[in-house]
Image (cartoon, rainbow over all chains, first blue to last red; front, side):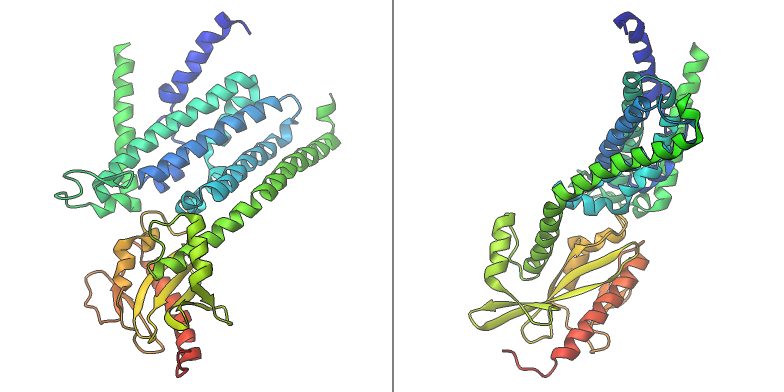
Length: 209
Length: 203
């Protein structure tokens, strides 16, 4: 792989994952976890790190095995690989960060069902070499994380008046807390708002070019 | 090609599964002791919290204090804080079904078995930000100083805004299921404890 040949491709993958083909607002994948874990920023952050690790590692593994895996059982193999990494993350949290493990509860295990991972494995890693697959997984994870963190910050601030658990000036004291923001309906409103915003910017970009 | 042969899929799946399972089993073995220790520590911390002994202590200190000051009663349902031979309070273990998964906690009770000292949870998987708020001071502090009610219904959890008797606390808005189940599981275990030891003199 020559540096000249791979550089533009890598850049392409990075921009696709972060913005042009962002898993949340463009592909609208992984919405279940977007709705579920975005009411507190710290939980969201750990969830995003876990998902990005699992996604990058799964893409790499699927890509490494792509020449050996029979086509008709590839989904089974992908699910197995994803579940493998999720269990590892879950065990690691239980052993080394028990407080966070109990905060996130069932959501870590639910990373297995996150459609972004299956989507990237199927759409990219299954037919591309390991290094680009790793980069693709990693930056799709970052694209997902960026959106989730934005949503979580907004929800925690308006709903609880805090950021990462720390009281914020004005919001903690004078702001009449919108409890609904940290409850499930708040997630729907915020997610819709963010998708609307991001797609409006994209529409402008498209017109400009 | 070999990978198009029907038997290959079976053999391949078997090998891949065996390979990944092997790693997971190994990793689980490596972390097993840590996970167990974390669970035990969470429990000991909860017991000390209800006696107000946990604050500012490192994990080894918490374990030491637990060993020094807490005695387990024979039935295993509650733990006693001792000062010499005198009982300083009881820590009753309460557990049962939560909304998602079991909730397990400890309720501290004064030596005369009438007043709640504090409540602490060491195991719960409720929704973060909603049901999981039961572990936060805003909810837990309400329990301090509650007078236990009748044996059948020692405590009550009422909707936010309702008038409270002196054995009741306010629920968390948006966590009705968690609070209803919490009320049931606390009352079940407290009733059992009250019935089992009622009339018995403090040793």
